[in-house]
Image 1 (cartoon, one colour):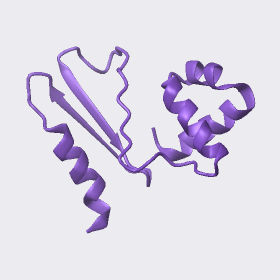
Image 2 (image 1 turned 60 degrees about the vertical axis):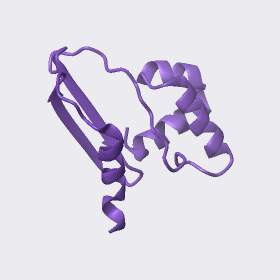
Image 3 (image 1 turned 45 degrees about the vertical axis):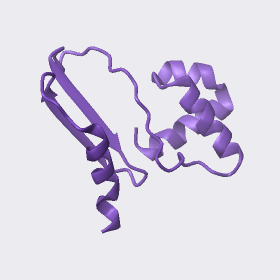
Length: 104
């Protein structure tokens, strides 16, 4: 999820409570709790190297035989890859390359 949306979710959670907001937005409770704690300490960004893996809900646009990988960086950039599930993908190398792209 892009950082501006996380920031908004944190603000809502601070006002309405973490559990109801995590449930309403279908985000990981522990991740939101951690972000609320960081915001309370003056740090609203996820720690460097933070990776959140969440299961996808079945939808009409994604078949069960398709792998969907979405990466988001702290600057709001996203990368979405859709592959047949039988294809192999080195997620770690891909994520490292994606996060390094702005440092060159």
